[in-house]
Image (cartoon, one colour):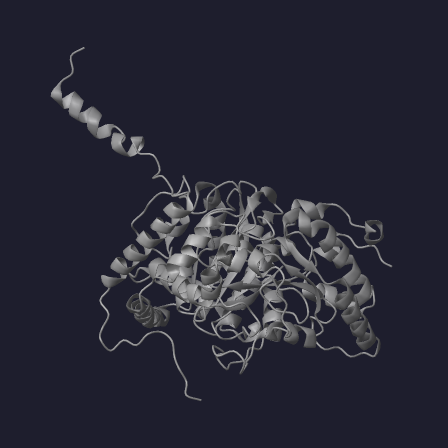
Length: 486
Length: 68
């Protein structure tokens, strides 16, 4: 059996698949190496919910048989991956990151897991997450059945939420890619904090059948990977119509960045205030360089500002109302008290008290937001802003505390792009773009609905000219002989 | 030491805002009862905030229902 080093654990999907096809190692060897690493290091970052050794080896054997016969299904064939523990896998525990659901087992596979299985993907583990994907609003990183998500770049920092295990596992080289989910920030935040590339697809492009619901009108599932290219390959496999998901857009997606419009024709909106004032001081130099890199691609960079709306209030109210409705049985049974975060418990309870008129008002304002953003995208093709304004928060820091070196500014800029983009169901791509205080930072590209190929084309080119996505967290610096783990 | 009114005004204008300096971060609710009360207050404030947005009467909520 081959020894596996960093060049394998931090390789992209395409690189791994090419080496499988070249028979440098077998799918079973590769799965074993990643399983051993995930088992050993996953708990170190509170990233592992469930190891799936037997089923993974079984699947890898099938792939090896296919490859022997020359049957190449997709670039994902034989490549291990992890999935956020809100996706159901028949016969296995699906905890939703929450103690009250620790013994929950479903008899069905989530559509996305079925699709990846069909593409030859090897699921090696379920990954930890913030309890109930953060529904109700949490104060501490410890709001998880699995403990706080620790950041592979610095374990005294948070890996981000709510896809905390997915972000940490990719960053630590425990899986080549992972599935996460986003209602408001849950893919982009851990992707940015952990220095990996994350894609939030257009609402409805990826089926949520078999996924925990937090907010029916805002939940999305997407990939967290080593590169924009990898995100495209995974989205290619998981996107598409699903009659089992009432929110399905009925659209398909084919990864074809080569057919995106010429960069010189693309107008990219940005707000200097986001990069020069709102960003934390340590992050500003690399954010500025990221803007320069985008300019260097030949994109038309134009100043932009979001229309005036209370985006955060609208998004928060919708998620609170829908989430509390989803979890009403948990709240009414009293089992909600078993959650780890007191603020979250209170938030879920008070969410049940939101008046219908306020929920409807929020949803009507959301329609206005959608309309205004559609008008904005007449003048812009893509909007760019920091994914987060600074690096990962300290574990000890309450998440609802204002960061000290972030000045209050009245200029709107694109600071609410996260809330606005999620409310309007827009796709977003988070790209690592540098470091602040030794921790990764990232920019987000947001586009029109179903413009994933445009975002991925820009992301791919950005990553050809930078190497931030290739940087390895400290854990990855040691060579890892697969045999020595037993 | 003699201080003129002009010097005093200049010193006061140039100084950092004392009130802002002295104000600690507002105490965060900690106990379950406090958190519940804070949550209810947030629900009330959010409703007030949204009530200020002008919504044309013909604006439909941003979800759709399909008969088929």
